[in-house]
Length: 177
View 1 (cartoon, rainbow, N blue to C red):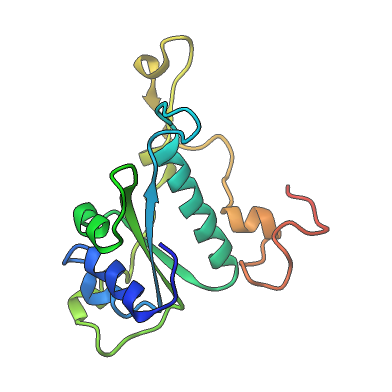
View 2 (view 1 turned 180 degrees about the vertical axis):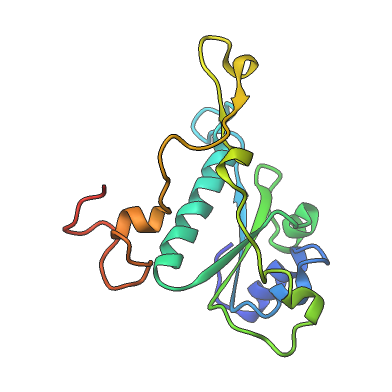
């Protein structure tokens, strides 16, 4: 939902589930993600509506990360509270919230919330990549033990080893390997 006022911010914050509010209240920007499940032109279902919202959130996350800003996406919202707070019609489905801002330690944040993001690691590809072949699709799938070739992080592929925000545009004169 768009708006640059304390009122809009408080309405987004009131839509976030209780478990996220202790830290989300410190984010300088809060956003609410919603979608319309049917096409406006013909009223038919838009099967990609949720995907489109996720893709938009992902693009926003990549763009702000390139500028050194953090995004925390939350599925933990109360859709009915959001609908009421923003007077949304039934045709609009509130689904997510985003907290956006620069990473910093906050002495006012309860330690149990502050330590949540510390020491996190990503799962290995062998835990998340499902491979399979033939016409059987998922039935013939198996977990791959290791990737066929080393995978470099997206930022390394785009920036040729420079971290995001290192001074070169993500899609500039250089080609992507």
